[in-house]
Length: 212
Image 1 (tube, helix red, strand yellow):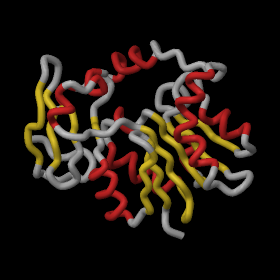
Image 2 (cartoon, helix red, strand yellow):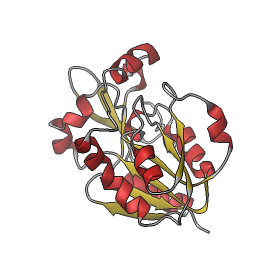
Image 3 (cartoon, one colour):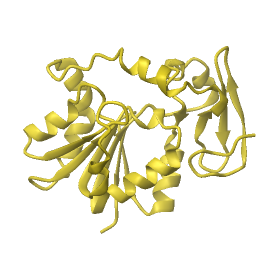
Image 4 (cartoon, one colour):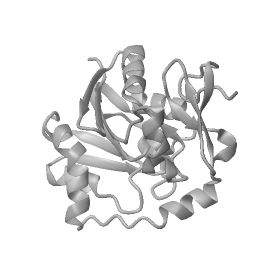
């Protein structure tokens, strides 16, 4: 059995299997993850992303992103500096935050790969529809914590696992670039372990704050 890619516990077990992939679950942090042998390689993964058509001028896409943008904006000091991690080929959340007076750097392993932006620290960072794609969530999670200053905010958007019955008919798992799936318990585990304030907003927005 494969160890958990998030907390590295060896206490994992089979969770679900369909015609494409097998999924496991960690008994410690409750992360559900695809068997690593069933992940796409980087070339096929990027080919999926190249099909995305995220247009900053699309009012519907902006409404979607406002679910995380609005609560982050309500918590930021004026002229804060942030990072949009995994911004994709058509950065939009960063523009929305800049329109509100903040400075936002961009990082995306495929589309904005300049790693110099990862060598500083920020008042906030966002990652929308990113966390479910991570092959090494333990490393990236620690990276996120290091990127945010004490008292800073992390704003995430991702769909969360409820139970195995709901998982069986869940469209979210059918995207072959989605390889890990958090639940509320997973975020609660990380918040307690890393001493973060945690707030859930709606069904898919998670705000975390580093201690001062």
